[in-house]
Amino acid sequence: MDYLGKYKSAVAARSTCSEVLAGSQDGGIVTSMFIYALEEGIIDGAIVAGQGEKPWQPKPIVATSVEELLSSRGTRYNVCPNMSVLKESVRKYGLDKVGIVGTPCQIQALRKAQLYPVGLRDVCDKIALAMGIFCMENFSYQSMTQIVQDHCNVDLHSLKKTDIGKGKYWAYTNRGAVSQIPLKLTHKYEQPGCHVCLDYVANLADISTGSVGSPDGWSTVFIRNNNGENIWNKAVAAGIFETKPIESVKPGLELVTKLATEKITKNQKELEHRATFGVGKGLRNPYI
Ligand SMILES: Cc1cc2nc3c(=O)[nH]c(=O)nc-3n(C[C@H](O)[C@H](O)[C@H](O)COP(=O)(O)OP(=O)(O)OC[C@H]3O[C@@H](n4cnc5c(N)ncnc54)[C@H](O)[C@@H]3O)c2cc1C
Ligand code: SF4
Image (cartoon, rainbow, N blue to C red; front, side, top):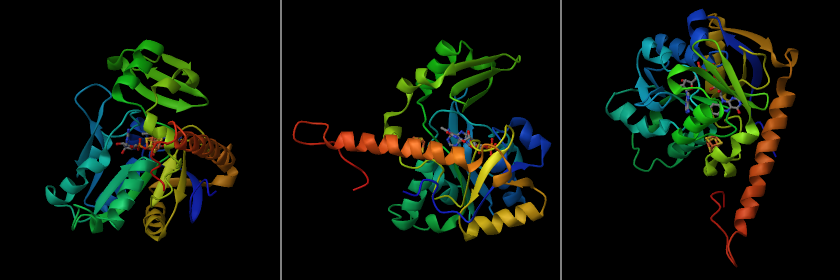
């Protein structure tokens, strides 16, 4: 099994822009890349997770300005259906070169739409840059609210950042307090659909990135195909990113591989379990 997907190169990287870094989740790779691509005309807008109606609820938006990209920085650990505005990005916003960020399942949906563009005529050929983010699991809005408010004892209005790492769910407040709970408490809140997901590091993106493997404030980045490589190399040459060989940072790809293997092995077992779920019949397997 190919746990990390195909890639041309992997590096540890972070943005050289302090404004991006100030509000980004990790190394600001997604936001800096989209700002660069927008300013260079590589994309003319990007689908990102904007602010929804409720605090910490993301909403997919088509960002066509640097301001919109900056205000969409950071991870919101609840579902944001970015693919839902893909058609609108072309038909309503008139984009010719679309950037999109997504979890592995969203990038799978994007590639599926490109191969089988049912209802998406003249849309899928406009994808210019697909940025994938690593993802172990996601939560509904209600689940995230319960984790933050009931378990971490932090009000959503005073929440500055949430993070999952080192076996814990972290909640940072605007006034500098840090609350953490072990991930074993959050398992029951995970979206059930995530338990049959066999992709950790967004194998199908042009470029994928996450925090695991690199030191705090840095990101692990996989440059996966020619399109990703072309754009990444231009951005690095333009000084948008600082990079280090992935072999030179700790814990590096060893930990990424370990987590990817754990996720995929566990979820493959769940798929096997579902095959014999009923009496004499099983639940549907989307992979066959
Ligand atoms: C549900 C979820 C689970 C994750 N699990 C892991 C993990 O197990 N290991 C790991 O290393 N990394 C994980 N990540 C990725 C990590 O949290 C960062 O998103 C990633 O490292 C990018 O950071 P950055 O500083 O480059 O991005 P930033 O510059 O901060 O930009 C982040 C981008 O992601 C978009 N975004 C935010 N929330 C969502 C969302 N819910 N759905 C879709 N897009 C969103 C934002 O709009 C923004 O464009 C997860 C992310 C999500 C959303
Ligand atoms: S675990 Fe898989 S299905 Fe769940 S949000 Fe992440 S990528 Fe999507």
